[in-house]
Length: 130
Image (cartoon, rainbow, N blue to C red; front, side, top):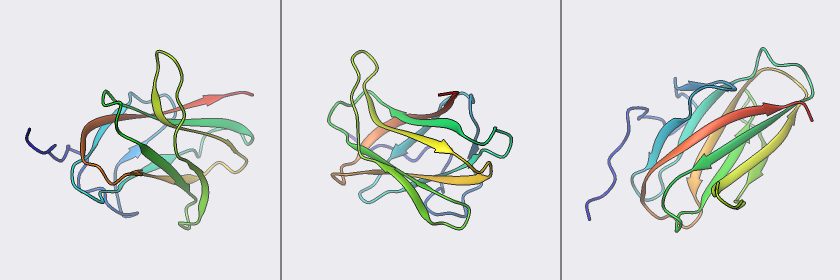
């Protein structure tokens, strides 16, 4: 089997990424294409209401993968983390649910906990009024 190839969002290995996702955007496809790969994605939450619950999920076909989501504020301070959760029929490999008190720019970092290399995964961002 050949190694997964970088996707069109590369390079996305640090906070200087220009790739942005917003609530409700079509899920983006990224990949952990080499050992130790970290995918950074800028999250624009400037237009949401304070107190909105934001849900960040990774979804992919390979059950053996173990993605982790880390959320950072605009000053690159870690503010939330999720290793993984599983729900029947959906199978998100990581799902971070976080209440955004300050609408602003944030950053997501996706890694693989086991340092495995695997193919594409989708990342989505949604909101809930909980």
